[in-house]
Image (tube, rainbow, N blue to C red; front, top):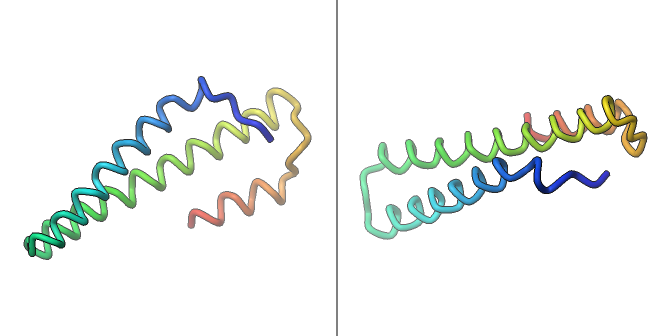
Amino acid sequence: MQLDATELTPVVNRLKRAQGQLAAVTRMLEEGRDCKDIVTQLAAVSKALDRAGFAIIASGLEQCIVRKDASMDTKDLEKLFLSLA
């Protein structure tokens, strides 16, 4: 299933932010920063990635249901959801 890139612009932006946050985590580790700060930042990265994944799946689900794209069935979509759990 091909996703519409224009619909996913917010997802791309979220992933770019997460990429910056992850770079910050690496820097924090290299600088010997406080564990609490590092874990807090890492949790933010994880949440951003999860949200991006769910947004991508939601777009795919909409495409399958609304646009009648039959390239994925219910089982395939279920597997996608569970892969983020």
